Amino acid sequence: QVQLVESGGGLVQPGGSLRLSCAASGTIVSINVMAWHRQAPGKQRELVAVITRYGITNYADSVKGRFTISRDNAKNMVYLQMNSLKPEDTAVYYCRAFVDGTDYWGQGTQVTVSS
Image (cartoon, rainbow, N blue to C red; front, side, top):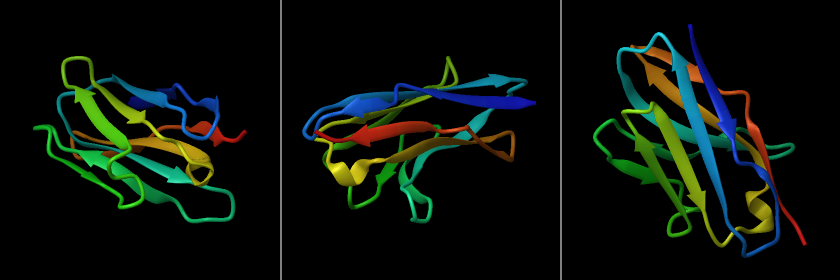
């Protein structure tokens, strides 16, 4: 069994920064794609950023230039550096990973951008 645990969420003022982390643990041979999704109240869950095992990244248009996804393959971790945060970035952020061909999700961490 594999678990994904997110950390780093919280309350931040507009224009501020946060760094989310996600640790994958359990019986792991290989993690292919890792990603961050988010879900705001009353909205569908959406893809924020994705990174392949080889470091190829892609971002939602709404976060390009402000968010950076990265990963540490040796530690089975993925990160999301969020800068210039806006109130519309407020959401629960979920980590996702394809581990040995199986799709896993974390429980989510709340990010609130408000003055």
